[in-house]
Length: 513
Ligand code: MSP
Image (cartoon, rainbow, N blue to C red; front, side, top):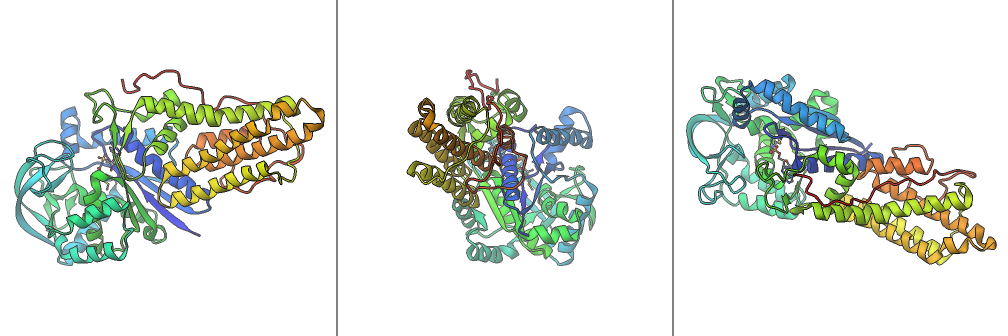
């Protein structure tokens, strides 16, 4: 069976789940549901990154020990994803014992192979990114992401001979143009590789930082947070047994945002090479959500919380906006006004109205009982069928490249066609002529089929809606996709009366306030 493995970054526990984390996690969830529906065997991993300076500092500010602090925030991430209906297969914590054991084993392996050495280094460090920056990467001495001044640190530490693997990494990027995708991020990585790579400082003296995994070959040091964190993708699978690792690892698709390209595209593959492990399949990088009132921050009061959005508008509306609005790879602006417009236009008016109208007519004209479909050879019938076949093909094509917005556009193009079909065939007028009643039955059957396929195509993106559509159509829940046209309703099958799937949103207030 076709297998596929999706990972999100493991999130730092110094912040609560917000829009950015939710977006990446929703993408992974959508991919999992989509591939599962196509009969593939999917493993979806998420979790929390709990060691390092940043977490130690946050815990100290809260006056609790780091483990208690990490337990609390990690629990919050997990319960948020559970409440949001995220179908992760496993939730990893870097404080889990098996993970720490894998990190130690890999460190020892690389050390024994001679790729870790002891030395002294001074450089500019950003605690937000938890990494050293070259002077070229800094802007006026500040980290370009966090806009905070990088601290100069000079210490004796252990170093990973990352430079040794530079040429091999370059070869891999050249041999496999999709190793880092979309292209703009591959270009960014190639630009970084044009300069000689420095070796990677992979330890912190325990005298300065207690909160980390001790180096197996020197207990006075703990490992660097990225060295610890990246290994989660391997340790989680290994924890499920060697067979699980062998089955999924070669099909590993990492999903991250552009902020952590360097650790994933440079540190991680070189670490894997040194550890003697095969490389991941692909690194998929998306852009950043920018708030329409500037950068997302607590002090600006514009932090979007997934649970608030779910509570106010429903999870599917939130998922729809995020997946429809962002072009994978590019930045997007989050605006409540655009959110409201998008939901009202596409979900309430276009899709919601179509479902209500069709079910209402089915109820009024035929007591809800589905009529024969006819042979479908009228031009308008053929066009309708073709529109949904194109939508199904479009979804498959666009999902290959993670073009979620295009996949949704393809589905909504078919819905536009279905709305035109109602206008064109005018069942509400035809029904007045008793001789035309069988034709009205045919028209409605084809519209019900349009609604059914829409529900199925939408269900990886909008799972609650997919289930609601099947329920309204009186069909049993399903995991698989049946995109073929016709044959869905047995003779005498009865559909339910309409109910509102997406209420119009009348307010335009800022959800973050
Ligand atoms: N702990 C590291 C990752 C280790 S992975 C081995 C980390 N954590 S994080 O909590 O800062 O999460 C960063 C990720 O959160 C981004 O790569 C992205 O997936 C998501 N996002 C956080 N803010 C975001 C936006 N404003 N927009 C889109 N996604 C962003 O880095």
